[in-house]
Length: 218
Image (cartoon, rainbow, N blue to C red; front, top):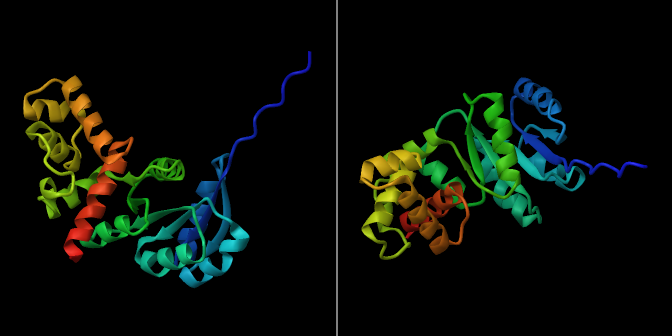
């Protein structure tokens, strides 16, 4: 009996944008080891990336964080509907908040492992946001008043769980901190998901940071 044809792996097309040629070459070798990733193009700056968008047709643009303001708005204006994942050498909290609120779907740190970068690529390509726990902690330290955001009048437990999420805590640690069971924390987290229309913790964080950025600009 003939075997049914195997399903083709849907490959993530990546446009790599970084000013350092040696860094791009290193990343290109890393991406080549992943069967579901394909390097659709390499560019040194935002101008080159914009010129190559139509040809590369990337699913995801992997870019140096320092050029996101030069690339993200222009790419959107040119009709690009894919995702942006930025690589940062260090974290500037206000700049990170602006980036996450204006189209960047994730931020990875330059010191992260190759495994973490590949994981971030898959998460962002799937439609979710990627915010490393160390980034979350820095942002939480810089913006401690998230309880005043547009989520409205939250119950005390919802506020406590929300603050734990923004501090990068696990459900178990949040439960220990507020004196509740882990199942209660999970149920409260689901209520927060329902209120904001998201499905993951990273998406919830992104909405909160976006709103905080808007408040800062008022």
